[in-house]
Amino acid sequence: MLSVRKIAAIIFGSLMISIGINFFLMPFKVLDGGVIGLALIINYLFGVQVGLVMFLCSIPIFVVAWLYDPTILYNSLVGLMVSSLFIDLMVPFHFYFMYYIELSPFSSAALGGFIVGTGIGVMLRYETSTGGTDLLAQHLSKTVSVNVGIVIFIIDGIIISLGGLLISAETFLLSIITITAGGMATSLCTLK
Image 1 (cartoon, rainbow, N blue to C red):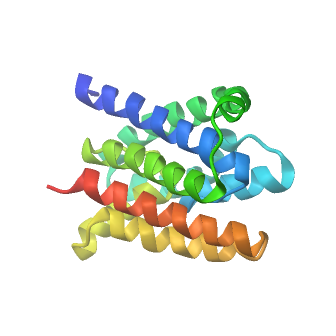
Image 2 (cartoon, helix red, strand yellow):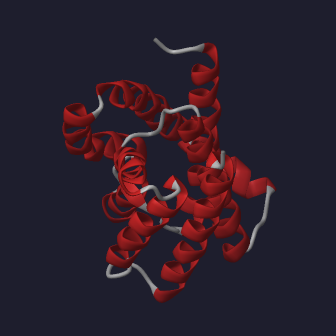
Image 3 (cartoon, rainbow, N blue to C red):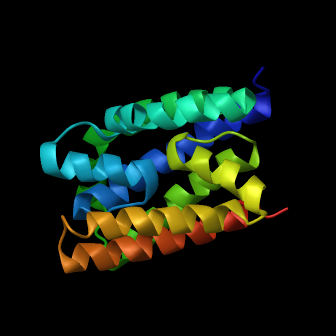
C-alpha cells in the first residue's frame, strides 16, 4: 500500500523529472542516462513521445525485478506510470518556458540534470522510482553496498557513451554535464 509520503514523493519526483526533461534537456537535445536517455535518443531520432518510450523500455527490467523484489516493483511501476504521464503532458509547455527564460546550453544541461536527479533521488529516498535503470541501480546498490547515485552515474555514463554515436560532440559534452549534475543530486537526496 502506498503511504501519503510515498505518493507525495512520486508526484513531486515525477514533476521534477518532467520539468528537467521538457524545459532544460529537450530544447538543446541533451541526453540523460538510463531509460530516460534511451527514450530521449528515440525521441530525437523518430519523434516518439519520451514518456511512452520510457514506459515500453522499462518493461523488460520490470520482468526481471519481479523475480527479485515484487514490493519495489510495485512502487516503481506507480512511479513509472506517473512520471511517464507527466513527461508527455508537459511537452507543450516547454515552448512557453523557452520563450520567457533564456539559458545557455551549459546552464540548461547542468540545471536539467540537477532537477532530474533531484526528482529521481526523492523517489528513491521513499523506496520508489521511475523503474528502468533506477530500479536496476537500486537492486545493484543493495547487492554491492554502493550509493545508488553512484550506480546510476555509471549506468548513465554507459548510455551516454552509446548515445554519443548518434549525437554531436557538443551534445555529448552537455550530456556528460547532465549526468554528473544528476548523479550528484541523486546522491545528496539518498544520503542517510
